[in-house]
Length: 334
Ligand code: NCD
Image 1 (tube, rainbow, N blue to C red):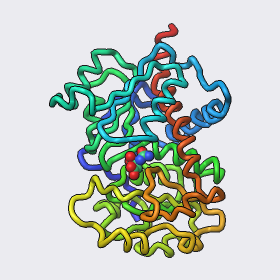
Image 2 (cartoon, rainbow, N blue to C red; image 1 turned 60 degrees about the horizontal axis):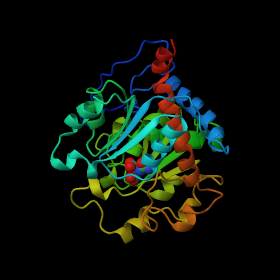
Image 3 (spheres, protein in one colour; image 1 turned 90 degrees about the horizontal axis):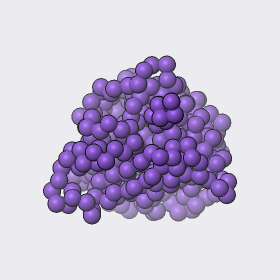
Image 4 (tube, rainbow, N blue to C red; image 1 turned 180 degrees about the vertical axis):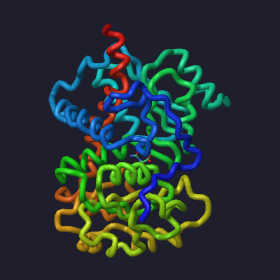
């Protein structure tokens, strides 16, 4: 089994980094693939502190006051956009979300011209979601500020993997040594890819459970075990992450029918019996109940961490914004 990390299609490797010696020596957060365990652990440690703050009645800090954050989403989002907006506001940034539906993108402006326009307004953090793999990296090269990838095509969704990691760490004590199943439409899922990189880096055993048509072409290079039978893949699993069928990224037929998909690949109570007794069930959302997951499994409060994942999302995004603006704030304070 190889553990070589593969670069998602058109995902360039170079990234300008701040001086070494930092626990997080990166200017941007574009993906997990180029982060070492120290950098991942640092973000999780900082996020842990924000979990407590987010549970208090008064949730605001002045940590990043005076800074400006722009959220630029070229694809739909509920959880990710809202949590980035809340995260920025709780840290004291002026946070603006730009909907591409009402912007000049509708008039034909290119993504890079939009980036240049936003850059001229001197934001300090730009959060970007885009339907094309590699688009956020390209955009980051045109921006002076820190750029956070909120999901690019099927390539990466780093903050989702970090919030999943924080959820697992809090529920299971650690990520190291856990057997973690990622099941469903792996081929089209940026969540799966970022999670594979992160969980491997942190010492988990990763299993992919999916029909052959829904596995990525480079699966042999990802350092995972592959199963084409759900009960076999679930055997003794500590964590199961279910994935939505990414119909918007599919060209052609990948499945015979949704009913058949649910029968073979949907997570039901019956299939879950194969996993360990205290298995944790996760899903990044949005869920398709009765397609990849049964309602009674999703809503089982003893096993499902789905709402906790959303909660951890705010803390993780606060941590990312905090860490990426530290040097800037230090400079401003001098
Ligand atoms: C995921 C995404 O957009 O990649 N959603 C999310 O950010 N919580 C997963 C999905 O859309 O299925």
